[in-house]
Length: 217
Image 1 (cartoon, rainbow, N blue to C red):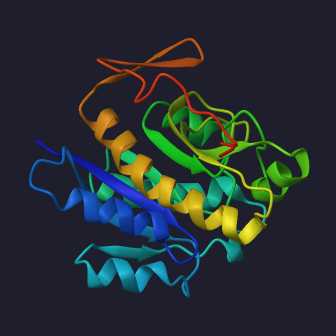
Image 2: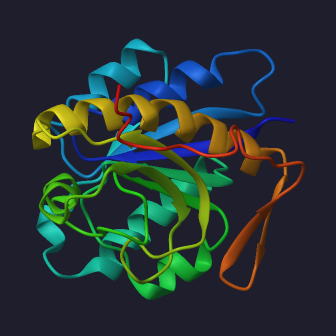
């Protein structure tokens, strides 16, 4: 049985599209059963509809700071559709601690940095200002603290001297589209266990012994 997944979005749904594409494979262990947006004009809604995925809008603006009220409607929709796992795809609304605890170990997010470095807003700018030579993306479980949950998977890219926020973002987005579906695959097949605050993955191994940047020729 494939695990039923909901993707929550607020915008264009770039990672959503990568997840939907991956899940269309016959051997993928999860199906994208629902896409929920908290904004009626989110571009990702049309992308999801074009892919044949059921969509739903639950506007968050009328709730203001009443996060629990919004989450009550969201939870009802998730229950109605039999959702087992959640993937956040640019979902620009914070959850209450109660909601994240209820979905602990079943809700994934992706952040465009190598966490725990550069959490929060403008991670690309943070990376460039810090002068790091490697950056990347991180898939992690969602907990009440922002960008702080157990790490499931990471992918790295080199940072060049002439990179801007836009060029770095573009390369990291390619990594996001690669690792998010793979992280969902691991979770859906039960290969991820949380021990304390750390994820352990059955049969895992590094793809290379090391990655060095910059390379001087």
